[in-house]
Image (cartoon, rainbow, N blue to C red; front, side):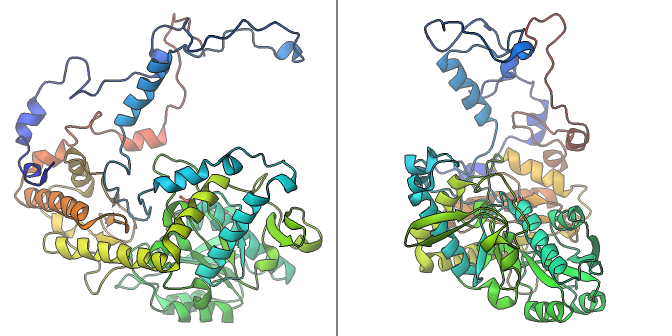
Length: 522
Ligand SMILES: *Cc1c(COP(=O)(O)O)cnc(C)c1O
């Protein structure tokens, strides 16, 4: 279907806003779906099982006395409920998901197929080691790829997200300072102003005080400011490279030299590894610890808050402090080093009960093997090319935050170009929804006013990028032409209109309570 030309001629905004709401709340073949607890027909069941023989319970007083409070649904009702809910949401399988800093790429079906192989999906973490040799070999192979791609000697696979990986890295750093007797005096962690919020949060969580490092006018770490803040009271720096402005830290070697000279460790936030995978090895840059968001760089679904994995690669200096478990192998096959004794004597402990996110390991390795080492290099090149294409095609209408030179895998715009229009970054993003496009990341990084951070990833074709660019250009032109209504009231066509997101975040209603008089007590 060619929608290119129709995108430009939506109904005039006034007409749209004045149209009556539909009578049912449904719209255009999309049903208005209530919460499952608000449905009818609680007495039903979707299965037909023989009555269980009632046997005694060991639970004594703890046996439930009231009904469990779950609705009974037939299979079609259950299916429809979830499919209707899914239609209210965006998905990477529908269109580009240009959220900067999130690396929302296509998830190949092959990965899903591999993750569902019974030898990976149906195993239990406490199974005898002899019965899970293949799974352990897969973890070992993944570890090998991660170490090779980063040029680092060790990796802790178990962290379950990027933020968890940051925690792992900083705990390893703290353990190393404790081992050398320097923990008491090294109480600070330096973090640039453009950092993702998880960086200072992690440092504070581990007990450090956070010191901000200034940024230069061209969006990089201010090395002079960093140098002036480094000293024997600093435990580590946390730097993202490429940084959250989508720029490569060109002084990275100097940054790591100064850091090590001061006796501190260099933690690199590896969330943006997609831009350099296969081209730059962080180990060569002097990085001591870096998390890799498998769910970003190596695909794996994470749009709906699905499981992630944030393995942390470690330098020679930090490797002894890696948390258990890890996989080793010898003539007897593969096994896990589990406890903080013998080989793991200096491990700082464990980050999670078992071995981490097996399904994510399988998906990530599947992505790596299907691309090969040359293909992964091309991932980085195409991701960077795509972002620069977007930047180049939009920069006459919108204002790039750092116009000089190419960007890495993200194109960052500020709201300078909206000055005088009465339209904000938020309004613009909401109008994108009406045009069928998920907005980019907004107002991050904080160092750029009204930031719009666009990350296309390598998996978008030129045709898809052109569709996106076409919509962005039409919207930008409408904004400049003073078509304010289109933006102020947007979204007009989404299942829900503009929400009070601040209130939703500050006072979320997390529990559904049955209306008074209802017998559906949960
Ligand atoms: C995504 C991201 C993180 C956190 O990763 P999670 O997997 O979401 O915990 C940290 N830093 C940056 C720059 C990120 O983009």
